[in-house]
Image (tube, rainbow, N blue to C red; front, side, top):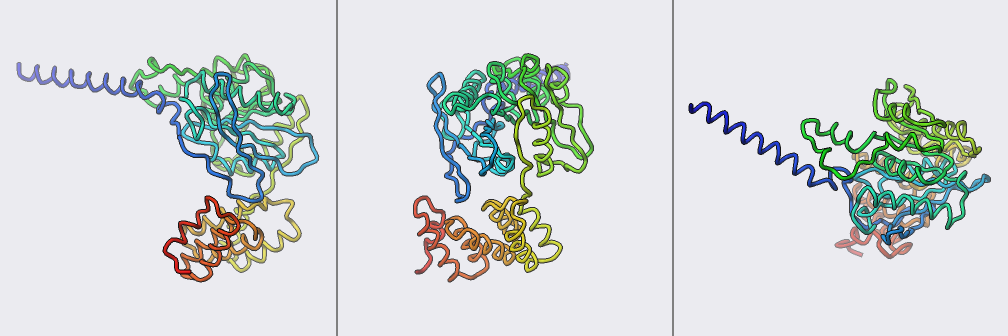
Amino acid sequence: MRKTWIVLLVVVIAIILYAGTTLWLAGNETELIYQPVAEKLAEPTYSDLDIKRIELTTSDSVQLVGWEIAAPQNDSLDTWLIYFHDRGQTVASNLEEYLFLRGMGLNILAIDYRGFGESEGEPTEEGLGLDGKACHYHIRFEKEIPSKRIIMYGVGLGAAVMFDVALDVNAAAVVAIDPYLSTSEMVHNRYPLFPVSWFVDAKFNSLERIPKINTPKLLVPPPTDTGIANNDALQLFDAASKYKTLFKWKEYFGNSYNHSFYTELSRLLVANSPVGLSLKTPPLPLADSLLVNIENKGIDNTVKLYQKIKASDSTNYDMSEYQLDRLGNILLNENRIQEAVEILRLYVNSFPNSFYAHNQLARALMKSGNSESAKRHLRLSLGLKPDNNPATELLQGVEP
């Protein structure tokens, strides 16, 4: 009899824990589906990028905040890309991706959904749809860009939002990166033992929406080394109506969205667009090439290589501030201080009027023990941009 009661007690406790976990997950829908990150949108730190803060108001009077990023000078007609970011991100999370897309000759609008970044409100499925439509309205009607010059680009949750917007508007193309079938399917896959999907309000049923979208569609499954796995992107491709393309990963692309990926993306968009998009092959990321050269031939040879590229081959590379800053940070994070100092000296010499270049070199010089040079570059950075300058913190406690 005692054993029976113990078994019953264990079963009751297990049922209570199971029900409690299910209800807790269902009650945390916002975090479960959106993972909103509320934070101040950082000011752009690079002097050579035309990034403008923008505020939009949705049809239900919610104010959204984000960036407009101008394309490099090109001789083609203006083409705009609306970037819909993934869950748990903000506009500022994807600068490297923007640079690749910008290198294709695209102007970019990236807005934080309601409840993300500095944008007002709380995220809901209907609300994010209104946010996406406000972005499209801004480009299509306020900037008067024709539909044939608008690309919509969504990642993860952003792809689901984009499909909602694409039901009601026209565009040159929609690009879905790592899309999922629906919120119900996504939640079920994450928590297969709990019926959480029965309780969540947000559905984001892309599988139901995609057959109704006539805009040309490019579906991109998650990257792999060996080909395409059986995943949501494949099912969405099968369900899609006409004008559809599947990004077929090749082994040389590796397992990330790298330069080869964006080169192929540009080719596919041009080849499959019925409106004749004019896009470029993005330039090679300078940081990657220089890092390989450092590993193989050392820092002195790499400095010479940089000067050679800058003098005679700059059109084939992304020569932006970001590249030298990124390489410097990679080296600093690996505690390769002297190599970082040399790269950041190149950064300062190439962009002498950038407060951020001086600030980054000062940080590296501090780590190398060269405090006198560090103080000089800190003060230079403060003189170039005295407001909101991270050098102010470094100068605290440093003798003049």
